[in-house]
Image (tube, rainbow, N blue to C red):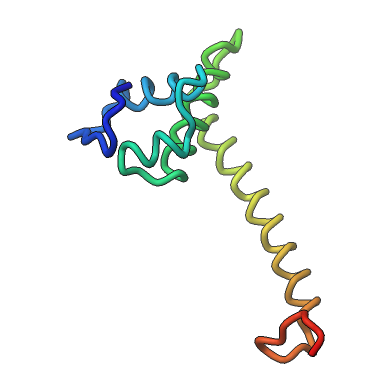
Length: 108
């Protein structure tokens, strides 16, 4: 990939996204560096990397799953993550019960 800071890419085609992800996987750049260099968010680059790896795993299966099955699997994983976050949120709410809003942890 080009070393120019804030490199401008007119359109992020799948081929360009794949080339960026491959450079990250090869260790030529980091997710954070790639995001900064191209004016992208870290989350955006991480999403591309995750999709790339997920697609690669499916491509290497002896019987690749069809697109619908892949979407169903991704929905299942996302629902699991939402469930985990809801539980974490409930635990935090319970821990904060009875504490005044904005109360710090320092002893005054």
